[in-house]
Image 1 (tube, helix red, strand yellow):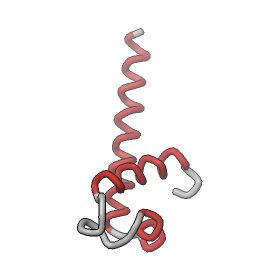
Image 2: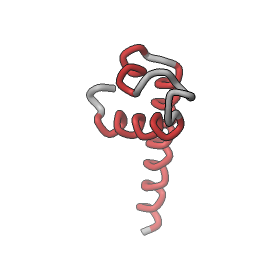
Image 3: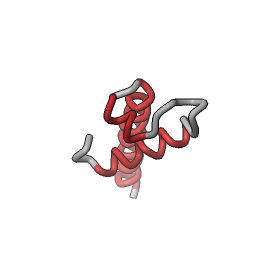
Length: 65
């Protein structure tokens, strides 16, 4: 994922929103990414799902125009 900057940025935004502080997860995004924590994997999965949904929505809009 280091090569997909948009996906990484989306995963970071999701991670920092869902896990806003130490009470939710003991490590920051970079450490979670390095260690592949479950919190990181969940944020990446959410970013991938969001990207798929946004692409599907965009494709559907293009057909209607």
